[in-house]
Image (tube, rainbow, N blue to C red):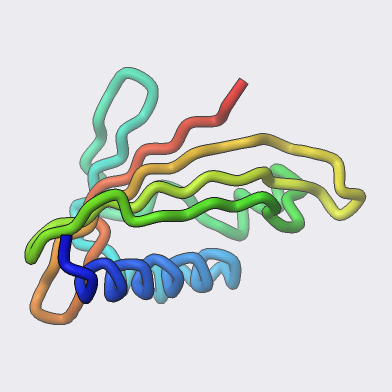
Length: 124
């Protein structure tokens, strides 16, 4: 695994997360190669739009912030990379909404790393 690819990929993921937390769907879309594959419960979907709208997700869940996050690059080469992230989403009163883990697949394009697949699991 190239250390340079790993650093670039992690930087791209961190930019994606910043866009997500700011509900900047245009920013998110700039980091996605469409169609994006969304791996849902028992099926894969090819989507021409990002699978969630951050602002709606935050409002619907009363999500204030995320704690106990762990993110790491699970592997890269010159054309592909995987990121795994997990954490706990909480409300303003600090009560837990859910614990999750997410897998992201990225491909290296001429203009940088682009997300092309995502799969999330809400932990029981």
